[in-house]
Length: 410
Ligand code: 3PG
Image (cartoon, rainbow, N blue to C red; front, side, top):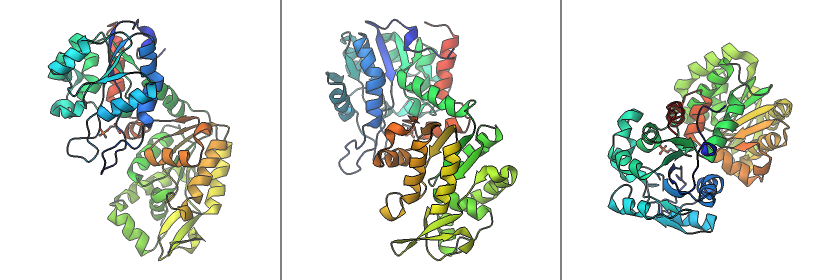
């Protein structure tokens, strides 16, 4: 039995449901328009549609960006996108918990949806504090008396212990929404007793995250192999003592990544062949792809992809795997000359009979570009929250739901 309540545990018809979703989307810095509606669509189709159909009065609480950042915007356009997806009227009010917001909530009819203003327009939203502290804030004290149930559907923000993520669970009956439920179930498949062999494919440039995840999944017997690509794999090669050449080493130093090398070296010494690194790489020779074996390094050209021999090696491990987790591309996949590694490895994952889970912005974009979305077992809506989950960290938003379930407040 799940440790948290779900929508199935509550009678929701005619009830006011305060639903925290994660509408935080990519924004065009010039036009301020939402450029990807993936998250809005996920919440709409999986949770908000069901609530409207069941006759709940739904109040949506969400954030977009952070004050001062280019992607910080009001939620008016998010409400319009939601309306188009659901093909039914969605109300919006440019207020979070003032008189306008309260009046709009009180006038909601069964089956209607209201989107409140960006919760981060209230400065205290992102302040740290315990759920009990947060439950005493103006936001919670103003909105909780108007609601019957709090629903947290924002798995992608569950690594944030912000007021709207954990404050309401201390005072209202609380449930996980369908996206929260789906993410937790699918991610648990990859982390709690995954079928063996289990392969983690770690690419991209966030080598610090990859190192932490590798330590956790290898240290706890979750992964049998960690295979690396992207900038991350350059650090792994450097940690093995391979001289990548001055240009590549300078690049890693400029990105402040070389400090990770001792930790990666220790990981490789401890887990030996379980950590699988490239045997060949593709160089950017004035815009043209040239593959060389790792034994031929150093080079004066930048490394932009893994090579074909590495792809074959990784594809064999992936074909034999029963569970695969992938985060991060294998190279500079945006450039056609260097998308080979990412495309082939991702195709191998899509064709594998094992359960596969993918997450992270670039990973999802590449999967969509190659038309592989339907063949990947589960695509997470989360970025940072997924990474922290895979590192074995407890996510405050999830812990708050679990604690709420224990209070038997229903
Ligand atoms: C995310 O996109 O990772 C979440 O929405 C959290 O956003 P934040 O990093 O601005 O807190």
